[in-house]
Length: 97
Image (cartoon, rainbow, N blue to C red):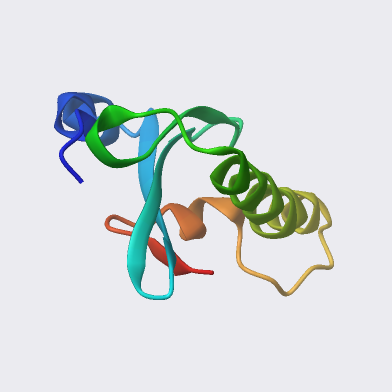
């Protein structure tokens, strides 16, 4: 998407950050950098390092709430059978919206 995501490889290698690509209709929409300890969004960028548009921001918020926050809450529940939140940060994670 012609943005600077490659500059964060060292943080990913040190398990400080995870890069996630959100897609819409199989086209890249937004790239996110997530803090692996808190699962919060550090930054979100669109094509050419642009800030996400209003609809892209909304998609990002919905994804974060439905996937990350739900999994984080379930991981804190010792009886939960869902995967822990760190598993959603697998290298090269792509989510189709």
